Length: 466
Ligand code: MN
Ligand code: MN
Image 1 (cartoon, helix red, strand yellow):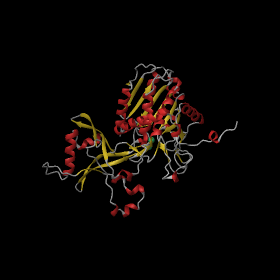
Image 2 (cartoon, helix red, strand yellow):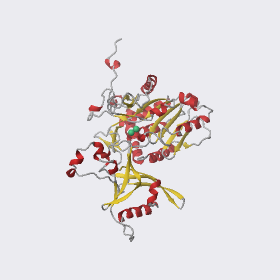
Image 3 (cartoon, helix red, strand yellow):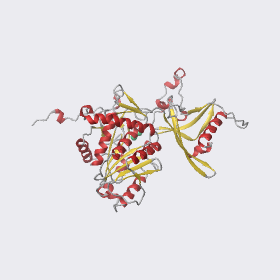
Image 4 (tube, protein in one colour):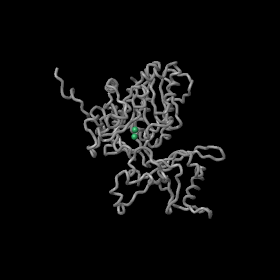
């Protein structure tokens, strides 16, 4: 029998002609709940809180070391309010391995400095330090909101207060100003990395002087800001030293296009994979064959270091604690486990074809994307998934009717990047990158396609059930 070119060729095709009737319906409602999640989860702390709320609604409970577990149990553990590990215990023992998904909850943003507050030329500002890989000029002249926590220390007592200003319609917002074009002739010929300097990303926060009679004080606007913060949060300037505050874009997630096929929002990278991987776990109906774990970490955008990053031992400790309930060696569990390192990839952008490799880069609406390797130059800084693992995952997705494709990070010599995949693979866990293609990645307003979003959810679900 001769085979047709359709059977013989691998072509990236739009997923629209492969969607079932229920896919089409579910895709829309799923995107609505995702948008709500994004509006809540603009920092990793907010994302963890929202994950706990959603998980508990689905029958998950906080679990502590030593508590007995049985198949079907749904548990979670929070790491310092900034990461979360969720698990559904499977019917098979843990030395048969787990089905692991790992995504990150942090996103590029503008952090408030440790000593941030000052007054200059009749205005008050916060000094900042950007977090993650950003094009700094994209963060000026857009509305920003302030989120985070302050650990207020008074008389040896610590009180943690939450700050969230700018996300309600009548809330004030904040901004980093930019130069008018009329005076920008020098700025406009600078390199994009120098148009806005890191030290120039100062957030405007006020301009009205305090009416308090204080002859010693020459900075009355700064004083007014501190008086406001003291009234509202009980803090003094020194409390900034024990705070984690950041500015994030102040616009909510919305549909893009006449056909509403895209979601535009801040923070798709990597809340889109966090949300799809977690909700697919929440929606497991029966106890799965293998224990399924969804790991949502912090600090990916700065290299995965630190206690809440993927390189922390927090995950190993959680897994060792799980394994101890069944008298299983964690090493035995790891070597039989499979991991989808769930992170976004670049979508081919016809506005910038010169950096992409058309055959290999992911396309919007072509589905959930498997990336065999990331890294830079000669595949440096990556864990490459084996041919065997790629085959295994292909079969799982095909069987479950998941629309999927493969992706890569642009032209070979163009640049590069990485994910948490290598930190999991280094632990002797078979790992492959899988995620959703993104346009305008790391900008304040990223774009994903609803079809790809829904197929990621479907793909993670099929993976857990394998
Ligand atoms: Mn990412
Ligand atoms: Mn990123």
